Amino acid sequence: MTTEYVVLNEEAPDPEVIRRAGRIIKDGGLVAFPTETVYGLGGDALNPASSKKIYAAKGRPSDNPLIVHVCRFEDIEPIVRSIPPQAAALAEAFWPGPLTMIFKKNDRVPAETTGGLDTVAIRFPSNKIAQALIDASGGYIAAPSANRSGRPSPTLARYCMEDLDGRVEMIIDGGQVGIGLESTIIDLTEGEPVILRPGYITREKLAKVLGNVGVDQSIIKPDSGIKPKAPGMKYRHYAPKGELVILEGSPDKVVAAINRAAAKDREKGIRSGVICTDETRNLYEADCVKSAGSRGDEESIARELFRILREFDDEEVGHIYSESFREGGLGQAIMNRLMKAAGHKVIDLGAD
Ligand code: AMP
Ligand code: MG
Image (tube, rainbow, N blue to C red; front, side):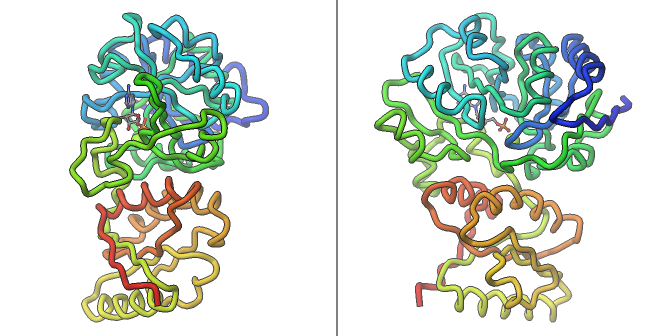
């Protein structure tokens, strides 16, 4: 299959291209498109054959359900069994935006889209290209991140091309995404709402609307063997090709330890990389030193993380060393993704 690559301006997406892309999805084809979180790989959520194609294009295990994207709150109702009272308040506060809510599904949503579950994940993205495309496609686009399974989620259309050229009908380039980490997922199907995947909408922000909000135990204790409620969270996502390890401890100790490790790598002919912050970037003596932004600017760190991981792949870095980030607020989502990318390899150097 030849993949058509088109560039669109988010402020004024060409209606002719949107119509054509919508037609591809209505006809059972696949289109990669920008959202505010990461690029999505879209197909008709109500067509089982489309969902199967999404799994095949990504190389994704079929028990890992897809998120259904809508462009109106009212469009939830035709595909769910009930709308819990918290949904309207959450939508009012965070939609359109990077929050995915889990509902009990009805028969219109095929089992292929939900990985066999009787629940469905739904999100209303704020990106204008995404909204126009969803509308032009019939209102329901199933879209996981537009990467091959196991690779970092794409924050630029170029990365969709790297992973999916020849596997999808169209890739829409809408520039670099604003957030850079996937949506927060919250389960509303079992009493107290529970966060299944941390994201840009933090627990603190959700608690302001909901009062109480839980966090899936598997996120809090990743090494406990507790099975995550979001099936996708059990996989080692976001893996760079090089071996990634996170170093925790005082900045002095982290810098010294990384520089020692990078010196050893050099003796062995292994290229080394560092994920750091603006405050420390000049202190490292590794082959590829990449700052994700200022330590206080978590939005920047979220936005740059996946790009940096992909760049290390291109630069054939064998060992990657990362600074650690705080666990609260947006840091919870950043550390969740970083820990997964590292396969939970952490070296604790102590505080001082
Ligand atoms: P991605 O689209 O790559 O961001 O992955 C979607 C994530 O949503 C995966 O971690 C899925 O396991 C999760 N997800 C989708 N639908 C459901 C659902 N019905 N219940 C729980 N988790 C879900
Ligand atoms: Mg993904």
